[in-house]
Image (tube, rainbow, N blue to C red; front, top):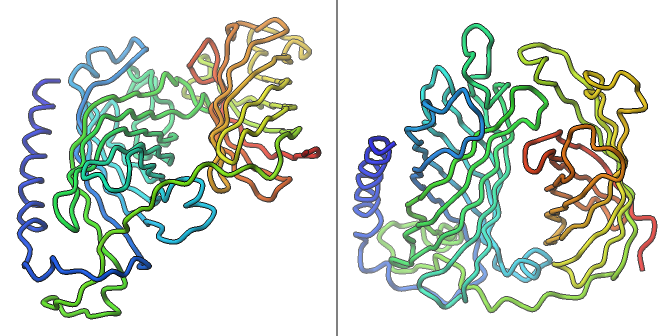
Length: 393
């Protein structure tokens, strides 16, 4: 792991030196700027990541001991006008990204790449030179090397060539000049297919990152596209103070949600045998404002994969209760729920969690994708569902 981290840091230093030459040595004429704050603000960032695996399986202990190295590139939009998104998020930026990594022996792990969407929430006041940021990302990892009984028997972490990509980064951006930020932070990355294929211990990566971000304003082209012009517009949007969270359209609701999924048992690894799952939920939700809320609910689960140990189909049904927190912004809702079973847990453990992302189709309809866990944090299944709010007051 030390050798890999050393090589990653050395490559990162070369990258930062190159970027410094390109971005920091700029003609002095570019330091002038207009007072225009209604531009089309964008940014491009590149980061190098390095760290260690957090692994709970058995077959890959030696393979994950060398750590990982990765490269991450992001393109972001920075809103400059007051709207529902900027009100709810304090002018958070958002965009798309590409990720590529060396996580170990490619014959065991493959060469993972990911495409994803992200939002970047600013945690510091807008006039600070050093701004703290929190950035969650969700997408799809591909080009993995899955478990195979004959050719890749050690890989008990991933059972498919594609998996969900999740990353959360906490760090800072230090303003170097009018266009460039120095980025630094710590981040956590997770690949998992939610037991849709087994084995599925998943891959968890935790480490440090360092990089640069370049800001630009597309209105510059309309004003003067001459590279030597002294007529320049502001390159980055100066955020105003974040407004207080606005009241929600309603304070209470009852939600009805239904979702399906598909899973494998460990005995089915390397095969196409699959079992269906169903989740039915009735939730009471309390909205404190347009950003924060709590929920309490009852769950009905059906897990066809329980047939391996419970031949009677009636034993495939479980009843549970849960409570949770909702973080809402624009049309999205990040939901974190924890629950326990009222019936026999059928070997799933007494506690489960459901992290989920919800999107409001209208004031009464929503779509949701979530991960239900078992025995704490290991995946039980991925849910894809739709919901309805029949009562709001």
